[in-house]
Image (tube, rainbow, N blue to C red; front, side, top):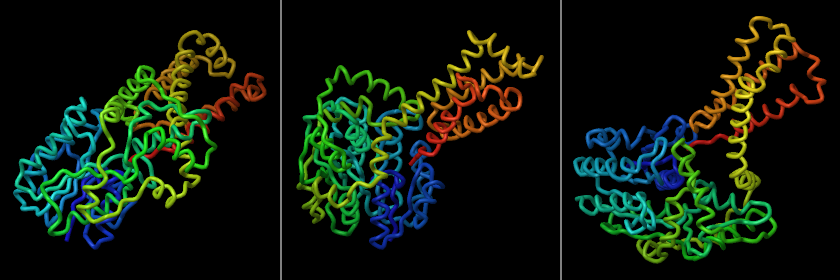
Length: 431
């Protein structure tokens, strides 16, 4: 038997693919970047599956060849760089459903989300509900699971943000901290999908999948802090009006490819409903889901978990600061610092080439600083910054070695900046 798992490089999809493989299924894994995903999970048959390119039912034929069950774990929160709600939740699934009908696929399991309701007032909820409506109108043997907040050994999205908040040193600011959630363990969710692929499993139903333990968002953050092994700290309610500017910045960053849960859609969905029911899915698939306390107890935090949590806010601030530094040095060299910089170059013996070197160097600094903020380029630009700085130091040492002893440290100052470049490049991670 072969299962096509779409979104197999994502948090839920990756665990679903592993669960099907462990149950003896052949797994065809669909992902946007299959080459990178294959390096992490070589046991699967990887294939490119970008919904923006699959809005024609005929385009799905190679992916659906010899497939018995389709598991769709694809979802995006908001439109942004590389993300389109309409393609991910409507035109892509519409084409998939028609292609499955043509290929006579026995089963389609779709992962939706609690709060997939137009009343939530977000394009995310509206389009998620639209996918469910497409399935309900189809001739397929379909099932929809609507998980609450999904917890896993690794952390992406909302759980990563909550861990980041939990690691803050003095206090933990939370908006909507009184809202209830029923976290569900990703392993339980993946096992449920395998069982729903079996003949005779429930079909033509939309089932909410919440965990057995209801906690508030603030309570979950406090649990994460204790799990990380950090001393207790107060949780304080951050008013929505005060959080709004941060969410707006998160929306803008999302359009540059910096997706996170610090966006308006996440907050609207949280304030609407993300708890869900814990009974229907457990009864349907005959599973006993783990509680939050069980999840955390079964998977003690490691140093990697603490690093990830502490770097959740530190890394983006580092990228912002590094970009500002390069842009500012370039603009200063081309503006108020022109005469001083030109004098240094001439003192170093560059003569008539000084102007060209200064203009070229200043423009390069500005361009690299801006390019660093483009999500797809960040790691490569950071490495290029480090390498160009090595060249800068070599040239400077040859022409002006005395500046190594300058009390203002024009050469020494760039050494920690190079380390920051390497830190940013080394912590880059894309699913």
